[in-house]
Length: 541
Ligand code: FAD
Ligand code: SIN
Image 1: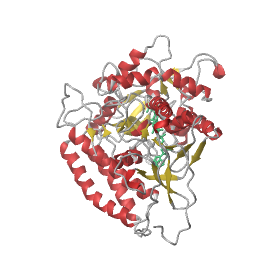
Image 2 (image 1 turned 90 degrees about the horizontal axis):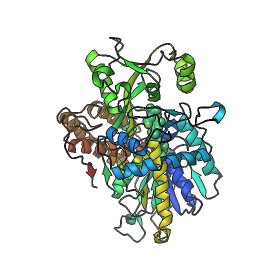
Image 3 (image 1 turned 135 degrees about the vertical axis):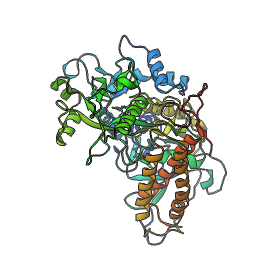
Image 4 (image 1 turned 120 degrees about the vertical axis):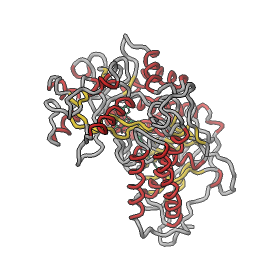
């Protein structure tokens, strides 16, 4: 029952398919569906507030004559420490050139070797890649991709974009008017951020494309909304999640007391940047990975920086590309150069202070090659998933690629099986009869900060069982408090996110406690060895 003080909610529009998320994965799925069916795209906050718009480096694809799919597959599996599912890796990598062609058709102005869009695509290099294979739009690839996808989606008559909708929970058989215990997903309950009403959006199929859970850590390059909402919603609805302990830390986030979370793209190292210990003045990667140096996979470089910082009591290390010609640096990294100049750092003449920060969620909702989750009617694509592509550590610039490939794969499977998707039954509306407006917003802020702090300190780059158990204990304590708060007060975006943040933290810590080896991004002092057989950490609700 709605509280009488609120106006009646507007009628909920009917869609054939709902897509939750308007980043690379969500909009790719929507565009691939929209020629055949009506699609509603729901997004928390604005339409360009996910990680997609923030991507800097680019998109990995085999496009150079000397490069091969086999080599890209090999690099991906080496970075992923063998935990990748080879079938998925091949599936994604073979579809990369098509994905790039599609983006060019949509108007993404990738850099080329010739002037003003002439010549072959310019390919840059990033850590773990044995070849130049990253297409990019200077150092702001994600922004260009997000704009092109949004422009196409806005122009499509079958796509309705619905920003300002914070999805709360998936609608399943339990929410049907005639209760059914089935896990069939029929859509989602979403908070209208402006009116405060909760609407039930139903459809024949739902695609989750809600991005990662990076904000569970105190320091992260991810945007504010990366709170693991889709992963938590799918888990609560009964879907399995996998490899949540594999949290990627990017080696080079700007160290600045005012500007937090600003990424310095790996392409700076790809174009010759050196990592230097500011105390000794030495290029320290020579001690950690003498062959690959600064272009070793991210887990190796992030651990090396963490070790230097701890051993020497430093606040940061230096990333230096000032030995390259100033024009070269400005041309390749115009946005980073401008941003740093605004902070008084001239990267053409001096080193940049950097520290590692959480960057990417390798684990997530388990999907197959068609983007299907465990739950009938529910698909997922992009960073909220664990598709088998990244394994224990994502290779740089493979994730936007994954969004395009699985966004299309999910759409193709939905359309191919359209006749089997029945129309949604009547479902119950959101019950607000037993909640009131919160009188203690401070609880949300306090808990949010607490979670992010202990996750950073206890579940970071280097782990121990004792620290993980400490984090687990705190999660148990907060669980009761946050659940009680959720039951008594009307939902807000902050509360929805806090609940999901804690759920994500629990999944990460439970997974980390189960892995008794050090592989890829999961590095624990208690189990420094690596098992002979790679095994996924699959959690069953
Ligand atoms: P996102 O783009 O994060 O979009 C998530 C969407 O879900 C948003 O629209 C959001 O509003 C919505 N959403 C979330 N929760 C809810 C909810 N409860 N209700 C409704 N909507 C919700 N990868 C590369 O391959 N190359 C790069 O160069 C690169 N650079 C990066 C740089 C930075 C700084 C960061 C943070 C990441 C980078 N990545 C890069 C990773 C890549 O950007 C992401 O993995 C990818 O963009 C994820 O896309 P997505 O569509 O899955 O999710
Ligand atoms: C970067 O530009 O360093 C980020 C690339 C990525 O996360 O794939």
